[in-house]
Image: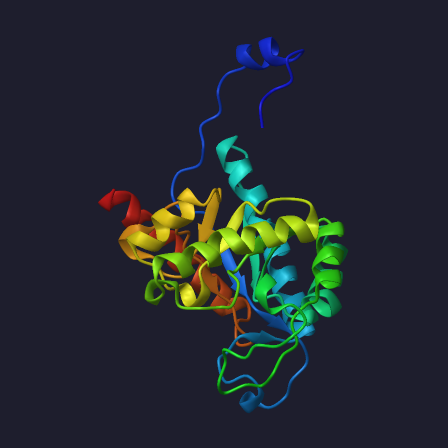
Length: 260
């Protein structure tokens, strides 16, 4: 965002703040709902509300604050990202609105919800093992946006983008972005690759589509603003495992910095 013309001279006189180096710590959640049988969560994508609340408390106890990825990247650009953690929720399940959002609001935190505007109000048909989880409707997505959370695109239909032809890739990237603009009144800044599947063609197409950033999982040599690595968070992640995952993120970031 450009500076206001009335304050631009003062801003120019202030010393420039160095942007943070390395990859930000971005956590990857999916579904937040009650379950008791591991068979109800064959992909390890569900945490209970109590577990999410405990994980958020752990972050706060370490002096961390959860924010949307857009907010995190803006803070890093200004050199004020110390203690910030990106919180992302993939797929746009209705349980985000029911369970995750109230916990985030209680903390005063934000997050990024990556949704599929081509699958409004249906379910996660792409998961053959189930269980079926309902996805947010257009009204639900608008409610999340109106609550101050960031809405990002997860594509239209949750496809492996590395396997689709160029015309389908454009629909997944540009078509989903335009549909979300129609839904929320704002073009989304962020994209999330379904399954974390990326290659150089997909990353460059995402940049060309006008997104400001994109989230992957383990992007390897493609890591950067259009392939942000994320840490998967599960029901099993208590304090000890969260400490280990935070350390692994730091070590991986140092390795990427050395290679760079």
